[in-house]
Image 1 (cartoon, rainbow, N blue to C red):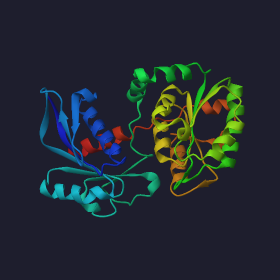
Image 2: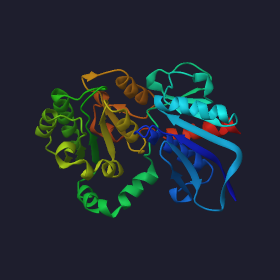
Image 3: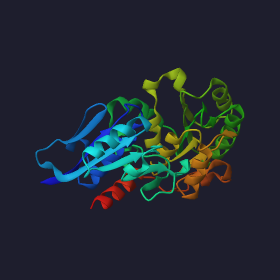
Length: 321
């Protein structure tokens, strides 16, 4: 019979809980439960991981509480005070009560405090890995888009465009510079582009980008084509390399987790800590900076694959042993 630690996720019911869930999945994978059919996630503001099979039971005296986001800190620390044996994890800087957590997980680009219970990640914990990408391609509803993108000549370069954001602004001049250089390089490689925008990408940069693309390509406009048709995940799965703008930590982290060569384009206007995030990923060989690329084949040079959920899960289980 497989024994797993009991896991409780304290959620603010925002996108931040995704990081907690992915960390929980990684902990379960380290315990031998790799597939979602092995366990069930139930609840709203408190999500509990329950085994789906009678062959799996909770390991006595081992409970892990995971929270993410400032609004979850008070509840998480209260639950820890009621169960002193629980192992309490906070993803992101809690900004208070640091000493009450067994482990605090903060991205390196956020300049975390130097404390014994703080560990850092490159980028953020996310759901992208080989299993997710293979699952994406297996979905029947993706078959038409998959076939259309597979028809493009290799190498296929995914281009993930951000926009105006607290992290910076991908503007008209950025669009011109990126599209011109990328088009020339991909033309020499004999390849193609798979381009998708985000809801923050403004119409002027989009139109400027399109003007300079002459190689075979597919272009998805988030604000025109609609979110439901967004081929973002399919592009990640089918790409031979990925170029991402640095104004989105999430997009950069997900691209670097695919195992494909990852290149980050830093716009003229990029703000703290997003430029720092791109440079840290590059320093650790998890990405390269687009401005530093001079030869077309540089687009296809491998980069190190991120798997921060697995890294942090290993640390947690080692500390609990």
